[in-house]
Length: 612
Image (cartoon, rainbow, N blue to C red; front, side):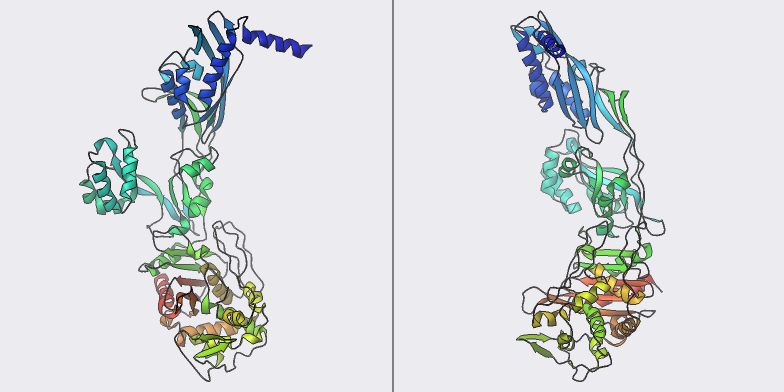
């Protein structure tokens, strides 16, 4: 009989011997429901104090906009007064659940029950002079390091430029002037200023200190402009590994929502690249507190809950400052979409990843998939050699060659009637390679390509596109595949791996983080490697890659001009892959005229900037 007796006892607690207790319970529940759904204004109207709504809102804001669940307990009713308890649970961003029990009092006036507001209704330790709040002991974000442990990204001096709302007399005019000075959206800035608090600073852009100094005179003339000095995690220059290393900025509304309460509004988080992929590691977790603050100054009064933090941890990459600097210099004058990847053949380590345009966050070096064009002739040649082809053979290089009704031609219209295969490779003769398509089984290119890394998956922390070398389905597609066209695609990273495999003797899985394991493919046939190395060297000394002929050291490479799209004549991407010593690279220039005239000179600039 224990359960029924408890139920009866609870019934009389709620009823309190008076039918009006039902109304008191309804009033308590209405207050709890309004507070729970975030309708502080409505909850305030259910109390006897107009200041209640403001207090509820201030405490919610103090807990970083936390959501709250309020569960009312049974009431004890005596005459025109009722008392009870509320179980309050806040979901505080970046902290989690914080629960406690507070007391609630209701009073009856003119046959209506209302909550008698007291700060202790919100929290038992609050007074009229205090509110709930949070505190964080977050330190600086950890550095991203190069292979030698030197910082690539570290805290550097910046100036945050924006408009101070109460100092702006003409929002549209000031926003327009600042938009022109910083090359940003003036309308969006004006909208943000109009929606800001009366004395709020609305940041427009964060500038490196040197960049700010260049614009300071212009900015100082704009009414309402404010410049706030600080620090931010930055690479040595704005273009240095930008797409790969990433950037940090205030969390977006989408990021806050997706975090499930782990990210508070306004928190600085990684937005792309390594900064995003390793945000938890680089940012660490601050020691956080829920506390009581004074309502006037916000000074802390008492700690209520404490959450230990986790120190930020630096990320050591495989990147080389020297190689990355040289890659950035090589692309410094490049305006078109372009990418350069440099790897270490002996390890597979990525030494440099550079992309253009300089303000783009798309890492086309890793995630851009393109037809490789004639750079794939390295793979085609390896497949021919495995099929028993004699590289000393003479293979004609006519201007055009028709395969099953499809006309193939050489990019520059070159022709060599009695050319050696080595000469065909050096001048990148399409028709010579197309004429050999019938020698190879349909799947031969894909099988050999895998030994050189094409078609394999990469376990990198950043998104990469997969390369594809599918078997040709008919005579035309198999002929096109011989020269890196048809449905074949590859990334600059993958093609750098092909050059590295020729140099080292085996393909090695790319690494970007120094702690990642090293894995390698099978050893490649020595006779095959000797032929490929000789052919690729001849490309530089007397073929389409002579832009590198004067580069110190023994550079070997292969140009590529890949057609794409449906224009007549088709548009082209320019490629060049190369190796020298323990360096291998791939260069891609979208819509470049040819590999020899556009991409190869960029590779030459890299080797010259890198040094011997």
